[in-house]
Image (cartoon, rainbow, N blue to C red; front, side, top):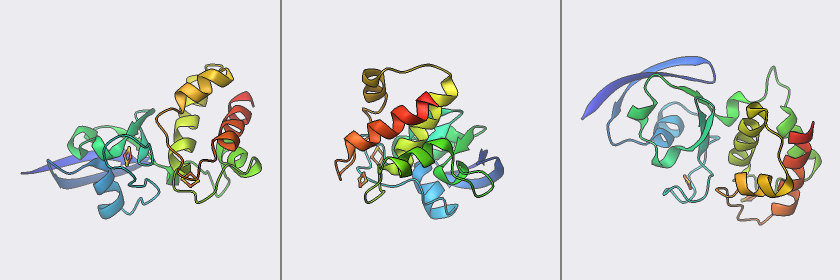
Length: 153
Ligand code: FES
Ligand code: FES
């Protein structure tokens, strides 16, 4: 069954017809060209497909596209502004927190939401916030350092 939905992606208005069984990840990647969100596990375990939905980090592989109707979606493509990396992206580069990069968009988006919350985080709280993200290159130490740096600034 098809349904017409409308939402914004990185402040751009989008409307399209989707199958009610289609995931938001499929729509973003295959139909709208936002390939920054990655398909890792496909079952809500790895965080590679994370996008912000109304500011909340969400696994888009297990989020139906029809649920996004009327929502504000931010993908990794919307994080740099006017060609300049965000402070989270810069911290990841500076701390060498990127290896293959497959997990990086998810980590960056969750960290961005942490900063937007205005809350202060201890190292343990940072680790807990990042618990839904897996890095198959196992670069966790540098990732945590990068997130600490970004949230401290
Ligand atoms: S691909 Fe969505 S959580 Fe792994
Ligand atoms: S940098 Fe390769 S999966 Fe994290």
